Image (cartoon, rainbow, N blue to C red; front, side, top):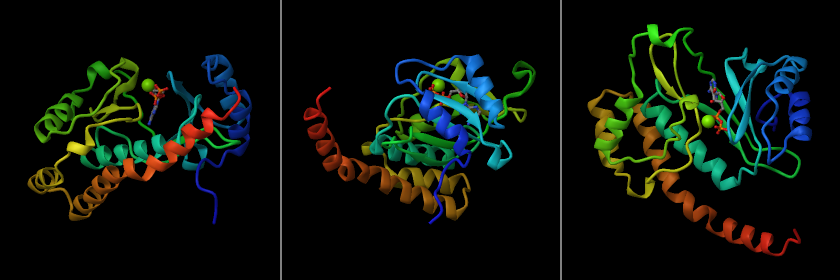
Length: 226
Ligand SMILES: Nc1ncnc2c1ncn2[C@@H]1O[C@H](COP(=O)(O)OP(=O)(O)O)[C@@H](O)[C@H]1O
Ligand SMILES: [Mg+2]
């Protein structure tokens, strides 16, 4: 089976060698590293560094985590992001994959790239993030947003995107029927309604799936000589 994920292996291995769990990259060094491998340096936050992905005509971005991204975090982020990008495609970029940190690779995500408008203040807002919050409030869907201004942008169409990855939400309280009814009332295609039902199911079972993994992991870490 072909390996999924970013194909720019030269960039991948350089990032792997240079990544430091305790420090961000120097921006200039990141720009040079990207150029050397035919990519663009897009940005970085407290958790990851972000490059364009030339395999997708630079229309996707690849993020590399500085610190460990556990299998549970990677899977949770993937499904949470899928849920929100299906419900609000103009406010959350679609994630094509998330992969946990492994012995020889940092954790990665691959996301659709959002192109910020040149002058955001001149673009009329069409799909505001505030509306997402209001809708979610009405649906009883709560989630944690890192509200640093760097995490939000507006594109040329006036759509306001949340760029950071989602990590937690009150998903055990989500009412699947209510969410489904909202999607029916708002004329979402059947395929998306069906996908959302499956995602909700998946998210709700994640905790149990990883319970044993987490216990094993803690046991393993306890026995590690640090
Ligand atoms: N899908 C995307 N499209 C365009 N830029 C992005 C995208 N995802 C992230 N970025 C840029 O990279 C920066 C860091 O990404 P982010 O996921 O917020 O990292 P962190 O979790 O470290 O804060 C963002 O502030 C944004 O400028
Ligand atoms: Mg961020």
